[in-house]
Amino acid sequence: MIRLAAFALLLCVSAAQAAECRKETYDGNAYTLCEVAPAEEQLRLFLWDSDDLLFGHFGSIDRALRQQGKQLGFAMNAGMYHEDRAPVGHYIEQGQQQRRVISSAGPGNFGLLPNGILCLREGRADVFETSAYLAQNPQCYGATQSGPMLVIDGALHPRFLPDSTSRYIRNGVGTSADGKRAVFAISDNTVTFHEFGSLFRDHLKLPNALYLDGNVSRIRAPGLGRDDAGFTPLGPIIGVVERAK
Image 1 (spheres, rainbow, N blue to C red):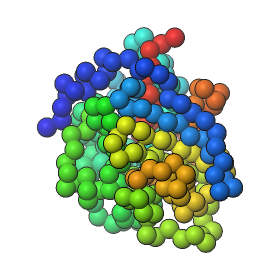
Image 2 (image 1 turned 135 degrees about the vertical axis):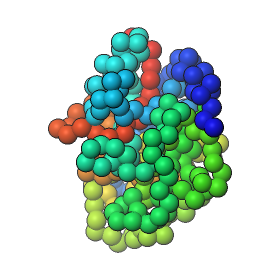
Image 3 (image 1 turned 90 degrees about the vertical axis):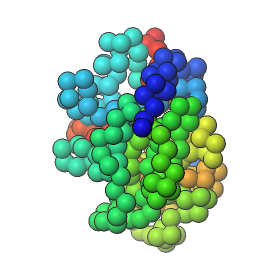
Image 4 (image 1 turned 45 degrees about the vertical axis):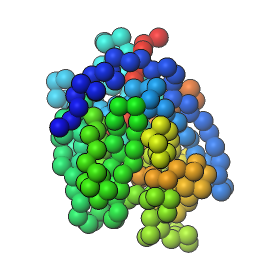
């Protein structure tokens, strides 16, 4: 049973600080990184508004939050979706499961096992490999499934090739072992899966990391003056909720 009381308590706590976003270069590639402290910040998933209309854009979420005296800080697209923008895999928002876990292999990056799930719990955020998620059954107030995993318990995904020629703009998230550190990254130039996974494992020193998407990847990083709008709406979005200024 999802702990709705814990979720409600989390929403009552205002963020102590905004997510820290920065530019970094690693192994010849440029990235925008946003680091979130889940114990101090309100990290939430967004898909549909109170009228069951798709948010689709960062600006739509920010406008809705401002009606509640809040605002959207850092944000990023948060997993793969179908043409109607419904999540491809497991999805929990505000304690309510909307899509079940998909554990079987399939086409595309999502089905390139092992894939994984980002789980938001009170005071922490964790990336789980999907079979580990099913075995541990963590009580998440928010969760989104995507794939492939980039880093699994300190090892790169076994299908990643150092000499791959498949290069795209990519975004993903990695978490620390104690769940107190979540780093979201988007490449500022095209990168391979091997390069992107190495960023999380070797540069950021995070034991587990999950690929969120490529090509459609967007980020909102107010501290850097960046707010990717895009022409088409996104599916699931993850972001930090702040007190309106």
